[in-house]
Length: 293
Ligand code: GUN
Image (cartoon, rainbow, N blue to C red):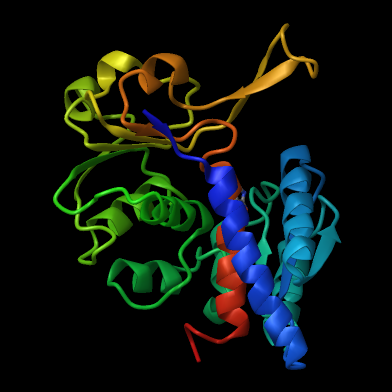
């Protein structure tokens, strides 16, 4: 069994990006600049935005964060989105989700200029991705595709089962794995909360991608011998053996499933580190105007 080392692959990609940025600086070119809008004080969102800033620094990108109070009106937020759309200094930006309940998330996402939508959430990017046109692909699915490619996982003609149908992970993942290209070409089944006999389906998967949001949902009896298992879940649970008093677990029961899988991503250190790196890759593309010219 091989553990897919997402942390190492993410670090390799960061080094590649950093060397591109060095060249840009040497040539007095424009340094990629990623901005984030953070509304309110959700601790998970604050952590996520802070680690984006840290990663930007590591590769030499400029970054800025627009902190807005939790009672910001939708109109004020839309104004900030427009400001960033119009600012030539900003190559790409994200609006950290979730937003406070009084703000319509879809309206905000649709206000972002698709050319700066490095999260790949705008319907134009989702649509372009779906029909195989150049687009920004959202960070987690993009990171998983990169992980699969760099780990030399054979995908063509394989049965790929995706657990979860969220707009951010499961659905784009299912589309990407079914695309007609050398890094995909899988036969894809997507399972969700209404799927019947889920075990019968998962146990036929050569590649099982789990983004269901339920701690240790996938057990060994659900997995085919020799399958590749990608675990997108991340849950914090109390632990008496850890110094911090908690540990992180995924959507997959790692100990028993890893004994059956041929390759598996750990939690932490699997999919997680690839997510932010994907955002950096998209921002680099944005600064080079690779997608929209
Ligand atoms: N909240 C959780 N994940 C994400 C993400 O990838 N992008 C944004 N904007 N918000 C998130």
